[in-house]
Image 1 (cartoon, rainbow, N blue to C red):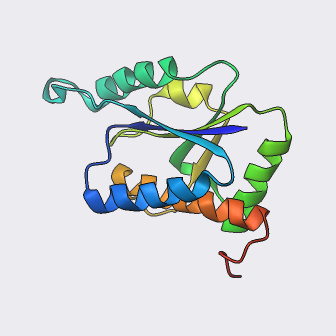
Image 2: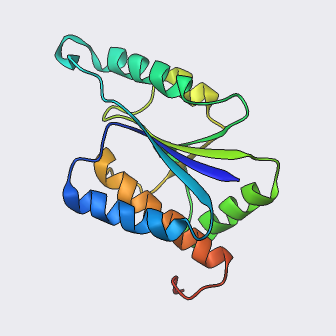
Length: 157
């Protein structure tokens, strides 16, 4: 199974990039992982939020395959503890899933077409985080999940 983190926009702050790179490097010991960035839209002042989400959706859906298992990182998604998330990943790894694609949307969230295409939605918290910070939080949780699956002493209950 390959994990793809599909994100709208680049990670801008150096401290976030450094943290993300740290966990991506660690994750390579456990799984194939790829980060795919979709360029942020330009000239958005003339667009409504809905128009921006629609345009982002077109770009997101072009980057996915029909066989991909799509999971949106969304505030309305299911809330899982770290061990529950690890079990979720482990279940997908032993199933028929070839590509597990986690998507971080733009600042206004997802268009309805992306929600319709998604297989699952996961919330990292009931709080709202910037879509820049979510990237770091998510890759750390992904790393934590793999250490839990492998029984390694990173996670403490």
